[in-house]
Image (tube, rainbow, N blue to C red; front, side, top):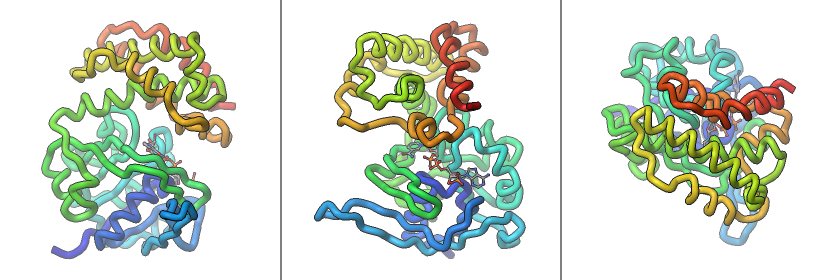
Length: 299
Ligand SMILES: NC(=O)c1ccc[n+]([C@@H]2O[C@H](COP(=O)([O-])OP(=O)(O)OC[C@H]3O[C@@H](n4cnc5c(N)ncnc54)[C@H](OP(=O)(O)O)[C@@H]3O)[C@@H](O)[C@H]2O)c1
């Protein structure tokens, strides 16, 4: 089979890393960016503790009209969730009837986010497990991980065979539970760090830990109403785990706040409020903190 042709929309931390993995697997990679750079470099830590740089063979384009007209096998969508409207011209140009779209984002209901561009059968949602950061356009620091958890469907096998590897694309029979479990954690961890402007060490305060527990308990109730089998004790276990994180460890929404970028709050905690309302599950703590995050994002 010829190598896959893929477009990466959102060539930041996640998009840049998986673009590199796809190129390593032999794919023809097109990076769709708004701030031009000459080459994509993945920086990791070598055995001696120093930086190791790997250049990724890929085409970099800043104009959707410059994409090749012959169609893509895959689009890897790896913007933040709220940035999807801004990349609509890229999605329109890159997604054809034979294109599959992997949505590499946090949150739940990934296919709904791209419904205007792709039929649900074309969409593969993915829960991303990685620790990476875009240091500047074209430079991604990869710290750990690099696994996509995806539903056990035909598209997942195709992604594993043609774009990545089976080790990088992990199938789960219960994707809703996988996505909701991560969202329960993110809804609390990202919220308390972003509101306080502090790293995860802030959870060592008992009052902040109580707030995180309240957020997660609401998220768990909504997850269960939505059909996810989130494990018992997840909030308490998560708080204990987060309290033990190394000094300096933060969250993606905190990093966005510190960098003055808009926040992903609608996908991370707005979703709990919205989907809770659909099922009549009360989410008073999430409802209270959501406007604060929105105000920080606007500012
Ligand atoms: N980073 C992690 O370790 C990690 C781990 C798990 C899950 N996630 C999730 O993965 C998703 C992606 O996160 P990320 O950390 O990779 O974000 P990121 O580093 O901020 O990357 C997003 C990329 O999208 C680009 N973009 C935004 N608007 C665009 C536009 N109009 N045209 C072209 N490009 C545009 C940004 O370009 P600019 O540089 O020009 O802004 C940036 O390169 C999020 O849902 C996040 O929550 C991230």
